[in-house]
Structure formats: structure tokens, C-alpha cells
Image (cartoon, rainbow, N blue to C red; front, side, top):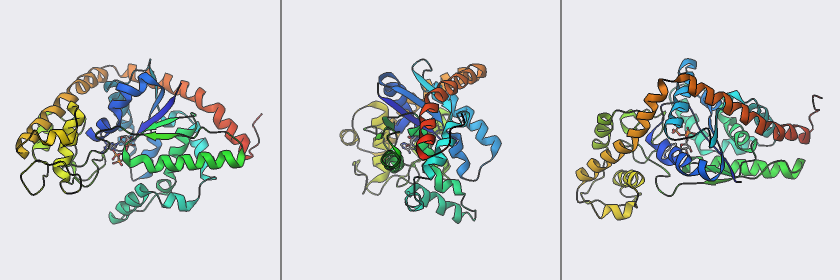
Length: 332
Ligand code: AQP
């Protein structure tokens, strides 16, 4: 059976981008067709300036939202990264296989490092080595497929390179994974800056729809979305990024394709109104289920505990094999 691995980083509240670009498909498709592991990748949240209590809170919230979005512990393995030591163990080994040039070429590193510098902060070493940890997340489980948004494909490419290099130098140990992407809404853009991705740690808050936003907040954010000059509704990502983003969001929520939808609308106002209602409807069941789960924190904790136990059992043999292959003395 195909094995898939994917994760969310608790660096902020989950967004509509996370949901339409990733989580919805994990729940609706991936967990039914594959042996799937989904992870709250909390170690990755420590790569930028962070507040410990907030990361803990966001990790719990992300896990609860994954369940609220439809992940079913009977169908998939859901856990928190730091509960499974094998991720950090393997990450170090992969750092010994990667080069610093490879790490420095990562677009996300360049963007986030320059953002940190602009804010007058320093860049954590872990931000540079982050792709080795992400590669460990994937390779520890013999993953075949990594369902990700467009922004993560470069990291999956690097993971493939590291797996191939390790296998060639030290003997076949890792499955070489591939990235898979949803057809629509692979990249939901910020409503106020439609040339930038909608990110959960964005400074431009009004441009980000969070999964737990109240319906009226969602409506307000979408009605105030930046549109482009011109009045006609045209799907063109380059020339009309604002309108195209709305068309993609609407298509992802309701089905259909953004080009065809463009022909249906004569004004930006009507498009915004329908997009807002479509998003409210998509979020409604997730928010209702989230509320129920918040009333039963012991259930969520139990899911994470048994998920971590299962994940440990799956990862350990391969990570032990990697340690032996690269020349480390077994503990006996
Ligand atoms: N805007 C987006 N459109 C489509 N997919 C997206 N994803 C994230 N943002 C969008 C996908 O969601 C999954 C989980 O993402 P992540 O938690 O690993 O974080 P990220 O990719 O770094 O995105 P964020 O939310 O913008 O976090 P910050 O602001 O901390 O960098 C991934 O599959 C991702 O592709």
C-alpha cells in the first residue's frame, strides 16, 4: 500500500490556505487510499523566534483542527513530531549527507531569513537545516508520496536527492518519495497581497482567513480583498492576481474550475459575495466539530499518544538501519 506523510507547522493559526491546499485532501482522499501519517511538526516551529507557551497551544489547536477537518485515527496515524525521537535522530544523519550550499539555495530559507534580518532579528541555524529535519520526517517512514502545496515542492526535491545520495553511498535504506499536489487551490494567496501566499505567520492579518474565523469575519476579509484594476472578471494569475485568487478559492470550495467561473460573474462584488459564502459553508462543519473536540481534550490527547506510539514503531527500524549503514556502532 502506498505510504504518505505530511504535516502542519504550529507557527500560527491554521489558514484557509492550509485547508484548501492540503488538509482537506488528507481527510477526503489520502487517508482513504493510502497508509497515511499526518503530523503536527512542532520542532519546525522552533526555527524562528517563538513563544514556548504559544507553540504548545498552537500544537494542541492544530491537532484538534486536523481531527475536526476529518482526519480519522482509525484510518490514519496522527501524531506530534517531537513525541517521536526518530525525527531528530535521523535529521542529524541527513545533515551529514547534505551540503550547506543545498540548504542555502532553498527559497523558503532565503525568504524567511531575509524577513528575520529585516525585523532586526538573527537567523537561527535550525532555519537553515530545517530541510534536513523535513527530509527525516519523510524518509523515516519509507514514504512514497508527500502531498504538499506548491511552496513545499523544493524541499521534497531535496529530500529525494538526499535519499538517493544516502542509498548510493551507504546502501539501500530509503524509499525515494515524490510530491503530489491538488489540482485547484495549490496556492491560496493573501487577500491583501495576492502575489504572496496566504501564510499563517503573515504580518498582513486581514489578508488571511483562519479556519476558526467567525463567519462575519470571513465575509469582511473577503469583501475587502484587494482586486485588480479593470472591472471585468478574468482568470489570469499574472495580470489579475487578486481576482484570480478569489476565483481559485471559489472553485476549490464549490468544485468547478476558475476559468469557467470567471465567465459567470460580471462584477467583482458578486464574485466576492459568493466566494465569502462558499468559504463560510466550507468552514462551518470544521468549526462545529472543533468546538465538540475542545470539550473533550482527553480524546485528542489519547489520539496523539497512540499515534506517536504507532509512528515510533514504524520509524525506528529504518532509522536504526540508517545509523548502522552510515557507520555508527549499534548500542547492543
Ligand atoms: N497558502 C497556501 N496555499 C496552499 N497550500 C498551503 N499550505 C500552506 N499555505 C498554503 C500547505 O499547507 C500544508 C501545511 O503547511 P505548513 O504548516 O507546513 O506551513 P507552510 O507551508 O510554511 O505554510 P504557512 O501556513 O504559510 O506557515 P508559515 O507562515 O509559518 O510559513 C503544506 O502542505 C503547505 O504546502
